[in-house]
Amino acid sequence: MEATDRQGKICLVVGGGGFLGRHIVEKLLDRGYEVHVFDLRETFKDDRVTYFLGDLCKKEDLLPAMKDVFVVFHCATPSPLSNNKELFHKVNCHGTKTIIEACKEAGVKRLVLTSSASVVYEGKDVENGTEDLPYACKPMDYYTETKILQEKIVLEANSDDFFTVAIRPHGIFGPRDPHMVPTTVRTAKAGKMKFKIGDGKNIVDFTFVENVVHGHILAAEHLEPGSKICGKAYHITNDEPIFFWDFLSKILTGLGYNAPKKNLPFWLVYIIAVILQVICFLLKPIKQIHPTFTPMTVSLAGTHHYYSCQRAIADMGYKPLVNLDDAIQKTVDSFPELRNTSK
Ligand SMILES: NC(=O)C1=CN([C@@H]2O[C@H](COP(=O)(O)OP(=O)(O)OC[C@H]3O[C@@H](n4cnc5c(N)ncnc54)[C@H](OP(=O)(O)O)[C@@H]3O)[C@@H](O)[C@H]2O)C=CC1
Ligand SMILES: CC(C)CCC[C@@H](C)[C@H]1CC[C@H]2C3=C(CC[C@]12C)[C@@]1(C)CCC(=O)C[C@@H]1CC3
Image (cartoon, rainbow, N blue to C red; front, side):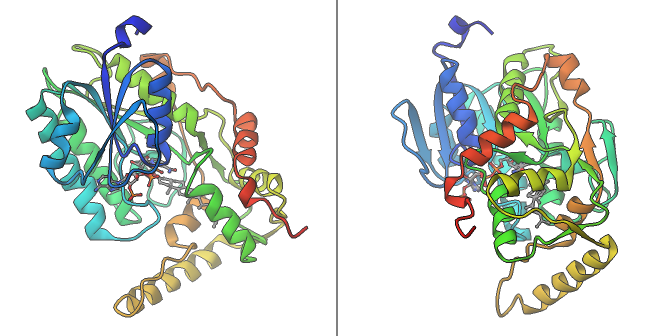
């Protein structure tokens, strides 16, 4: 899409106050779009942005933000690492249906959903997985369960006059990442990062946030009547699968922490995670505890899970803008506050 074509076009980013959402906002502004942000809280200030505060589960909150909008990016979610079943179903399922209703009522024709490559992951190895893999029959957590339902809702809503597409990133990291890097550092500081889970040879996709943003905007600019991308899902990765523990080690050593050297059997850590999950469930009426080592995070740390993005390359001309090494360096440099000062 030419720069002149973007002028005057309004993009609405639902969840635009979050990690990925704010990066999408910034890139849309750079490309000359007018940008609306819809979120629960105003997490940043930018005079170029029109900020709408509200709950995406309420259509009356959404409609003012949708006036004259060219495309909606839906990248809102409760925190992927929480375990609140009701909240996940409310926001990711009911809320997504509400967004679609509001789009149609406001005359918005395009919806780009941020889905997740994890919708096909159920704790077993996925090697170079394509978008044709079936959805996980037994999702490992409520987050994944609701991301599957959400993607189905959005892709099934595609029609001759309402165009939808789902972008499936995996393991997003980068500046202002609230999950990957802070959790890794917190775990290292707690002395729980001395061991690799498993043999350390499981291969995983980690995707730099600027590449995820690029995939979203490419999809939005291809989302036209008759386009082959309508109603489809697309993996967006760095296209550089890496040993999971090599990636974490680069992040840790880049921030001045020791990388794990020894190995613990995967099955042992997994059993401990399951026992922890049962204990947290039993203690729930008394105290909410969110352990770092859940069956999901342990599985992600000990199995292969990398995906083909050939469909995005073929259909949208996708190509990662930032390679993994440069991305890791940019990310490490963006977190001076997480650097190890005790050495
Ligand atoms: N992070 C990752 O590695 C991956 C993420 N994804 C997907 O990418 C998207 C963005 O993830 P990420 O940026 O990490 O998430 P964040 O939590 O950083 O951002 C989500 C934003 O949505 C907001 N939000 C939550 N509930 C509502 C609501 N009811 N109404 C309005 N806004 C709401 C959040 O507000 P608040 O913070 O106040 O709750 C937050 O600002 C998500 O759809 C996620 O599923 C996919 C693959 C990997
Ligand atoms: C404690 C260590 C064993 C792991 C530290 C890193 C983890 C916090 C991250 C490693 C893989 C990440 C991941 C996600 C969140 C953070 C990790 C578990 C997601 C679950 C985020 C939401 C998604 O859609 C899928 C991601 C898969 C990878």
